[in-house]
Image (cartoon, rainbow, N blue to C red; front, side, top):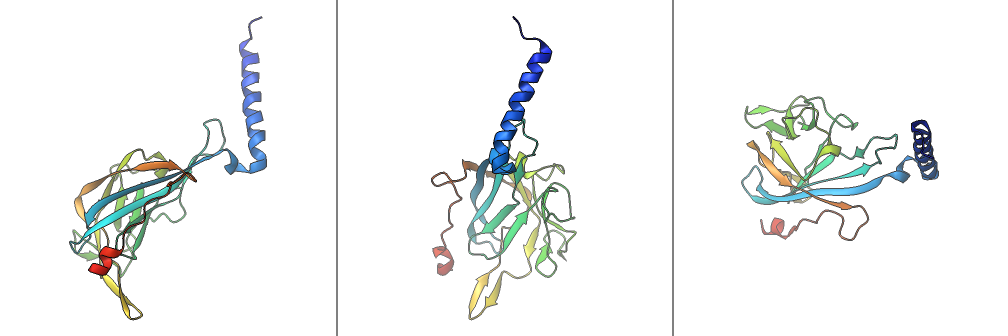
Length: 205
């Protein structure tokens, strides 16, 4: 006997409900798939020195039938030979600044300069933006590549820590976006994390 549309709907509902029950003992995170994402590329810092730049973040992807939306960490940007760490966030993250929409990182007073205006940057200055033409951009929607716009430079490129000098320079500002190709791997897989940048070049400098 053919199954009626109402019976089919009830079966689908029961199947989804059963899957939800299976996930409940593990909490809301039990049904997610976790991924590491990163992009490593060569560029120059604001001093014109050749450096590696790393973008990295993590996502939790939930099934379409699940009640929870996909989640991500902010994107971390690090520059070789520098202790300065940037975190680019969207409106889903608590640390997101108010300098712009989309995926952004705002300036820090006393630390950054708006490069193309030559003025001190502040919390209302967009120093970095990912896919800057899209003010609704979210980290969870990033695909296999992204565009990164850098609009600030550091006030100082190093600082004294004890008896040593510590680099604080970062990726050189540019009116043209950097095109970054990305890699994705399941969290926990062999060699799943981002590569470790070589610091020997820092000692040479």
